[in-house]
Amino acid sequence: MTSANWIKDTPVAHRGYHDMNHAVWENTLSAFIRAVEAGFAIECDVQLSSDSVVVVFHDDDLQRLCGISGDLREKTASELGLLSVGGTKDRIPTLKRMLETVAGRVPLVIEIKGRSAEEDEGFVETVLDVLEEYQGPKDRIALMSFDHHILRDLKRLDAPFPIGLTAMGNTPEEFFTHDEAMQLKLDFISYHHPDLPNTFITAQRQQNIPVITWTVRDEKAREHTYKYADQMTFEGFDPRGTPSL
Image (cartoon, rainbow, N blue to C red):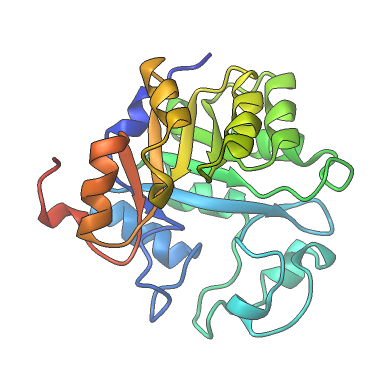
């Protein structure tokens, strides 16, 4: 296992430090620059274009963020790079461009958005190839996913970064699935804060597995996070105004 203890140190800006998609939109270079300027760690989502380029984008479909219908994976990186996000000057960035922009100034928590094992063949390898060229400190990058096949690929390829499970739920059936993933010897967990506390997370923290939460949007949720987890992924407010609990 790789130590992910550093992930506890700094609040993590969800999809960058955007303003809830008013002027600064999620997963854009503007949101990442704003996070760097504020000193927050950055969470972002990555997907794969039709020509196997890693791009930073959350949704499978382009409608919500770009105003056009269609599957992101059916477009090339060049085509995606022409699309305005939210009608702003920001375009869909590649992971490479995002890394060049951040340039090692804050930690990164990268969520790999998978589809199926068949559709995602080569996806993890491509992400790792891009990260290999990163000029910033590689010991401040973490990778995570909801998708167990992505986590298995990361472990199979001996990815040199902390690897985490993104998860939610509070039923025994869900905990059983999460426990299966943790058998891969994962390094941290990103968990849905309304589902805390629960026996699965309590057991993991007893084994010194760092736990961050998603997505914290107010002071009540912030307090809840620091009671039952180690750090938060946040959006919609500035957590610097209140001391950690």
